[in-house]
Length: 579
Ligand code: M6R
Image (tube, rainbow, N blue to C red; front, top):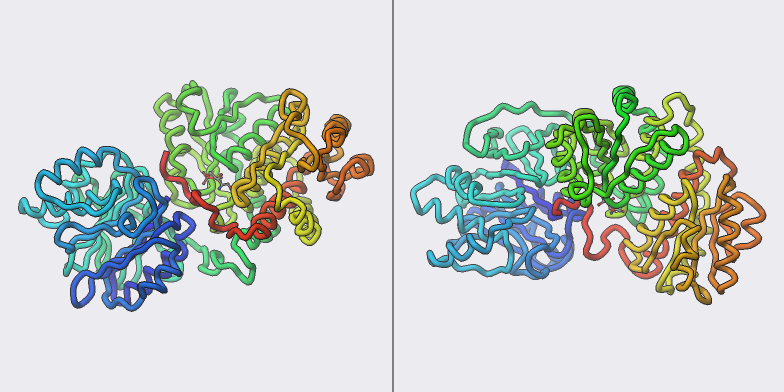
């Protein structure tokens, strides 16, 4: 949900900002802009479109100057257009700011500013901020005091960066939206996430909730929003910049699908003993998450109930505050790749207020979720850039398996993933049969249900084909009326206790003309299917790992066959920091 980057130092700011914006583009890509304090004064360039095309048209990197901020947008208030793109400036053009989040009371503030004569050129909530600062400065405050006074007027969420002409400083603050400070030698950075700064530094301070900072060439000072200076301890991160590069693959998604065979080792090596002890102490366990992470939450629930006989609830995070009643005897497990998802954070706020204990499973060190959690388990999947979550899902599964079955040996998992990756050419052909369809159904039973849901989410998210998943037994209760000649049904039918029931479902579909593509490891299922994807025979507990890879590849190749960029699906963003 919008990417922010700021730089102050001795190098050409526009180049650093441009490269950072390209890395941050996964957070929003409908418009982009850069402002640099050049030797001739403040210069602003912005436009609708993706970073590379706008920069090519407007020559971002031709701007001189060593202090600047940039922004890549995911629209919330106002359509994607040049006027609504950030940075926004005040009436004088000497103060510029970028914002990620939602300013809920912007209409009221805007009306007040208009009455004072301020002129606005966008429909955004964000534009008011530079004007608020201008107003406070007119009243005699210096920029930092004006910045703090303006922040106090905001309701909602924000990660904000602001600069004023000629000052060689960047002012930043956050509330419910991420912002990380990068520490360099004679230079300072701020960005929505670490990956945008990795080529310059590996020393970071994630800005805390309701904190501000002032960045200068000589270093960074941190403050509370009341203006009291605070001390922060930097952390060192050993991710390398090439971990966030495509490495010869056509898209990040394909690279990240292949990454799974390596990173799953790291996830399996994660120390989960403290988390494990925590889980065994609690009778009442809630798991909360969104999207793909919610499917991992469902896997936790299914595995726990089926194999350990321990009931637990998996609740979609945006629903959690409305339907869950945690208390001090509840353990709430939050699963979030980014650790920044606003819905998940809200669910945790609710749980915390009721006295629940929090365990977080996340991929991002220092992310917001880690600061509210009592215990954290890191996924160790390396940075995931593509909007579609792939490798972090298998890492979530690996960690969940370790949490639930600490005594099992899971060393077979990387091989299962590698074997499934061998299906790439086969899946690419199958994608051709699906690319022109309007609806695709996914069915499974037992442990295959969350994987079917994940397959459907992946396909609809990046191919724009309507896709839905059902437990096989549910077909006859409604969805079967949608199965007509040629409608694809992807049946997850591995050889486990569900296989004969799935065989029945496949026959039902075929009898109505449906086109069955099955994932199986039995002749019987293969024979009944129009297309059969044969899985290697593995312990049924591990079937989810074997099945999810072909589904990820299928979504990827259907997306590419339809001429879509799978890394940047329309209307979506990688890190969803609005509710
Ligand atoms: O960062 P999170 O795991 O909290 O993100 C949750 C969802 O937004 C995310 O999984 C989303 O569904 C993915 N784009 C799916 O591929």
